[in-house]
Length: 619
Image (tube, rainbow, N blue to C red):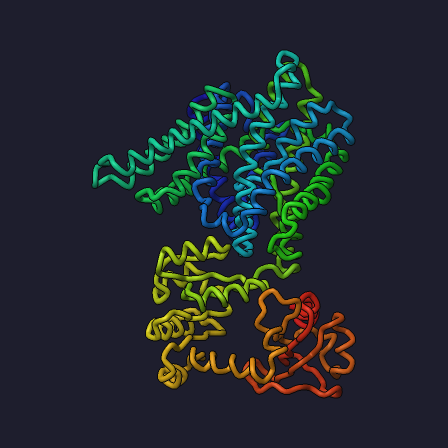
């Protein structure tokens, strides 16, 4: 291909990729869907804008550097403090979950296509990778709880590394000339080489960023370029030492630098993010164009069955096993089960493997590998990516946030109770040591001043249903409350008044206020007059719950309490009813007729109350 034609083609691919990203943002679906469709069109017989001869022998090098940039960028964004919100589940997903994915997928491929176990394990290892390139765009569209997002992102980044190395090891068992290699030794060696090169490069880049003059006027630009060079060097050097060890090196370097206190971090993140979008579009479009239609024909209906088994059997099994006993709700676990799209690692590695299979005369193996992997990528990206918002809404796992400004004893105790009820809590704290202890306890914490509008926005005030100002400073609490109401239109704002004399002044300004002294007096009075229910209400680990919910279910509107009661779950009672959120509540009689918009208070066993809330509020 002439140089001018090649330049025009590359420019066209990048332009189409940018337009696809814009369209994906508008439609709120992963851009990978459009990349693959465009690639398939460009590679169709008769059109064949992109062929294997287009890039000559440089294809593997181009794809390799693109993978390095993508993996490094994903790992750079993964912060240690976020992992702490779901540590057990995250670790299980990349260990127990990865094993289940590998074995389950390989068994499905073996059963459906009748190929060797070695080839089945190559495909199974590639499809272990869910990939941050497709998971992260989904999470940008679906604002789930931090623990859910963290677990999925951590799984994607780590399993990219696992999948790439495992695939190479099993791939060598298929080729006749390398069939006798030691699988365990091959995996450990590649992982060790990747970790070593990643640590060394991250250390060198950190030293240069921290202690070497990068020319003051051009320091941000030089920092961006230095980090990019580090990612590529780590990848290339590790790959030179051991095939596919570069993925582990890039991920390790990205994670270490992303969690180090490096200068110009914001500029580096922005630069790497934009660069990743460009190379992601180029690689996906290019690889999809090289997909031989014969590969899809080869797998046919069997490929659809394999993908269905992966998405509907293997994925749910590994997620529910990995999240057992953790703080995830059933809806969150179901959502995680239905969000496991495959990304760049399976596409790139499968394409390169297929070329080697074809050169070795293993045409059917190449077609089964390519057809199954690309079918899994396309279908999971389209269905799991495209339907993620609707699935999340149906499962009701997109909670509005509760922001607590102040991570002291009051804020922590409140966060514990709210998290226990399934709320999505974010704590804002100025003291770094306090914030660190909050994070260690498993809560999301943002360090900074809660009276700063931009910090409140970062904490999620635009999507908050409640803001609680719980610091020890009444002036700060008042300002937080006023900002939340005026700037973000939060529906429920509550301030703590440390000085009882400030209560009237707060409420005169329209701020709902709780006085520390009055709250203590109420608690003591309740302990004296109604100790049983007080103990039951204040025990965070209790089996019961009390919740207020708005009636939106038309099925119960217009019916008396005597008819609605039996429709609720067992051990769930209607305790109070009010005509509005702030109206006086009353204990309803059996003949009280419920209407849409009424607020009812449910009392009972915890699980029953949660089910009752879902039934009453059908939105």
